[in-house]
Structures are given as structure tokens and as C-alpha cells.
Length: 108
Image (cartoon, rainbow, N blue to C red; front, side, top):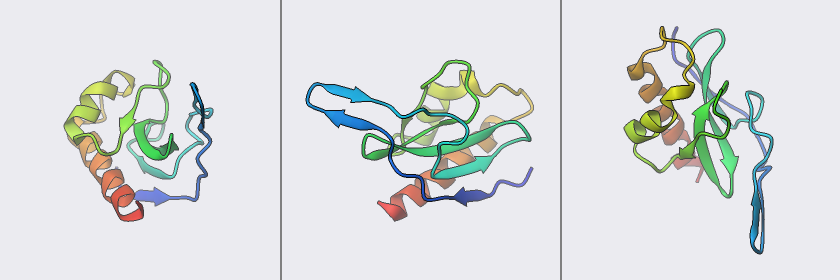
């Protein structure tokens, strides 16, 4: 599958209050940046606590992501358990992460 960055204007649904932080309903429809990796899986960049988190669209271990400023290989190693499809390569995942990082850097 050709890797292509998609962008949409997703507002930050996370909330910060003194002593309290809660995340939005993170899922395959909550994203600002998306790179499809297969028919059923994508890498997402989504607003979270004033930054962009990166993780898989479909996760078994919910809420596994890291900020876009973390090294791409480290992000992948942290989220890899949610890849869900052995046909998706590590290299494609890291490339997708870097595509999202570049877009988030431009937009920051």
C-alpha cells in the first residue's frame, strides 16, 4: 500500500484542570494526521494535552501512544503490540510515524 498522509482539522478533545487530566475518546475516528497502513489499520497523529500523540488507529491495548517529539523508532517500539497485522512492516510504520512528525512539526 502506498503511504499517504491525510490531514483533517481535529480539535483537541483532551482536558486539563488543576490536578485532573483526561483524554478524549481516542479511536480510529479521532485524528489530525493519518497514514493508512492496510485496509484495517492506520497510524494516527491526534491532539492530546496540547501536543500530538502518535499511535495505531485500532488498538487492543487502548491509549498506547507517545508524543510526536519522541524518536520514531522509540514510538514504534512502544506501540508495536497494537499493530495487529504481521503483513504491515516495521519500516512502513516508522515511515508513517516520520510523515506525521514532519506534518506536526510544520503545524506547531
